[in-house]
Amino acid sequence: MKLILLLSFLILLIACQRKKIDSSCCSNPATQIVFDGGYLSVPNLFTPDGDGYHDWFVVQSVGLTSFNIEVENKNGKSFYSSTDTSFFWDAYNDKNGGTLGGFFYYHVTATGIDGTQIDEHGTLCVISEYHGCIKNTETCVFESNWDGTSFVEPVEDDIYGCP
Image 1 (spheres, rainbow, N blue to C red):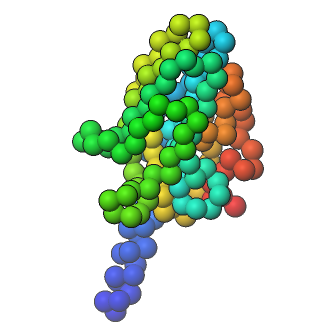
Image 2: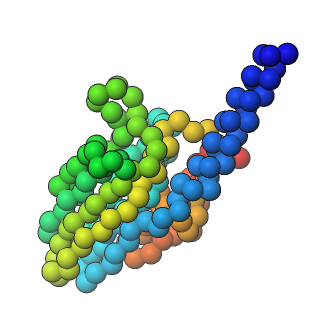
């Protein structure tokens, strides 16, 4: 009897955690800036779980003369930084040897070829071990939803874990 109660509790706990991720993961919008001669797009979600879909945090850009991105946790601890617009971050944690998950904050500074100064902050949801269903919506933006001028409608490949 105790085993049945324990299993029921664990199932309920997992179900509640999945609902929380679905409802709050993409509550803040992705960053998208278009300027004369280029653009910058920063997604707000990626899933480094090794399934081959959206496994990397990637910024899409054209027409930048300088670029810097910092990714940190809510306490301000830096987990990643780059000055290369072609970076790929997999959320791997060198200290613990595993993939990080949860909410992170990013700060991007850049300069466009037209002189546009970009200084943006945003949130990033990293889902490393999740087997639920996340549909790409206007608020959940993977890197593949940006065509250089606007977000494109989700296609079959842009739905993570959904039947």
